[in-house]
Image 1 (cartoon, rainbow, N blue to C red):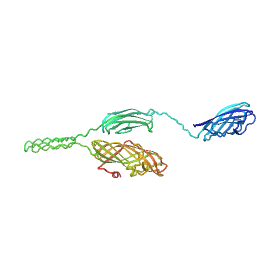
Image 2 (cartoon, one colour; image 1 turned 30 degrees about the vertical axis):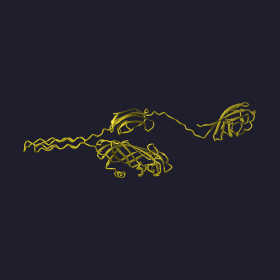
Image 3 (cartoon, one colour; image 1 turned 135 degrees about the horizontal axis):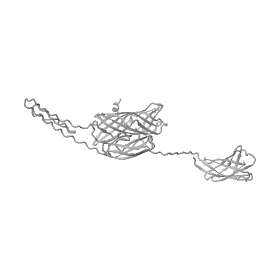
Image 4 (cartoon, rainbow, N blue to C red; image 1 turned 180 degrees about the vertical axis):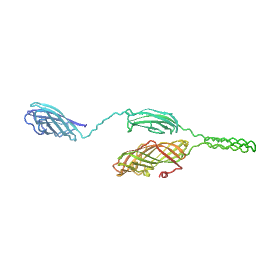
Length: 513
């Protein structure tokens, strides 16, 4: 496909030898075999469109019975918009003569045209040929296809109202009209999901208010998606009740039969401890000698203090996609530090990545990246939830943490490690043959589902997603691109241990030699 800059109208007049000669100012140069015998001549009238300058037009006349092409050129010495004529003599009479014309315009465009004519002795024949001029530009062919996307047909939540840290069962009905593999992803304005990719899962409220829950289905490659959003209500968690009152003292033991009696007074029964209260006082002694005092009531139950530092290590596999290397298997090793504090009615958390090792499975394109202390110091995120009373065996609602390093929330570049380069600088070794410093921006999102196993242990699962942008590097071979880390599981198991006080990352890492 090309753009036509100009069209030159060419009138070709075939006549016998009695035709008049060409008009002044136009010349022709002819070569080739004229075939002898009866012949005709070709009179050309060439008009050049306005804005196009053509200095000469080359021609070639061929036919099956003409031994060699009759070729030559017409010198026009033109200016824009002129009309020129010329005469080609010695064309043998016959049918199926073909003329091919070519020229180069002053703007560099290539002009071509062709036509077929018959030469009849002593008769005139007129043909019209269009000389088309094209630039050297290329073309693109676009072919489109129709794709019927997967569809979310319904969503349900039961119940659709729950207190903060309460659980709802949510489910979606989704399918692909063409039966292709699909993937589902749950998301919400606040709150966590037990499994973000299952059609049916559990949603936990973490913030009071109306929250929007969204189910998105797409083809397995992530394209052609559909989503449905619906609201649920998370109500404020009730305040913890006051401690119960002291348990009543045990009843007095019954007296013995007499001073020397063989019957011993029974001890008083236990005083029941109030919920969260102090122990009940001891029962009074039996009236008779030998009556044992009743034992005091047991203490009421109370919550566990989880403020301080929690340390955990995640080890899993997944897929790492980066420029140059492409997608490759990866071994992922992360040490996390979670600092928990409480302020008024809010439980606050600060999540730090103290160590992050991502090593691709060794092969021809293996990749090893190094996170320096300066970069690790930027891998931190905060979150908060409403205060709650942790109990052994109970759920520990944790917020979703989002970490931005080398990039702000809107995707803009930030020199987070203050080294003068955009983003953060990550030394990278590609296949053992290429070493460079990549300047990148990272966004890491982590959600955790946890249970307080004992006063010093939290067990649960976590899911995380990492996306990044390459802003440049120390080597021209890498100037831009996208990064993603996809774990092999959406529910990576973890165990976190409690450390008293505000323990720094260096001491947390020492817990995992």
